[in-house]
Amino acid sequence: MCLGIPMKIVELEYPMGICEVDGLRRKVNFQLLPEKELKIGDYVIVHVGFAIQKLSPKEAEETLNFLKELAQHA
Image 1 (cartoon, helix red, strand yellow):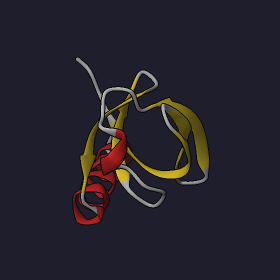
Image 2: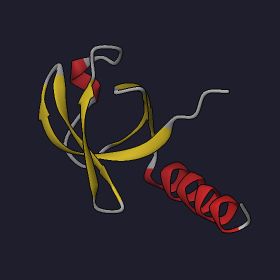
Image 3: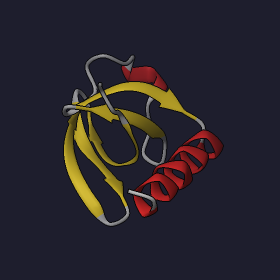
């Protein structure tokens, strides 16, 4: 099973950058997404170091809340 995590772009020097979630920062490769569609503050799904999809802040928040809820029941 694969799991991608919603993260916020905090630094961007395409094709690389830094994303953050809950204070955790990771280096991310953005080559799978068009450069012109990305900006600091956007949310992306990150899987094994690659941004694989852009998503809305609402989608990111809902997904992160769901993952946190799952973790509480693990």
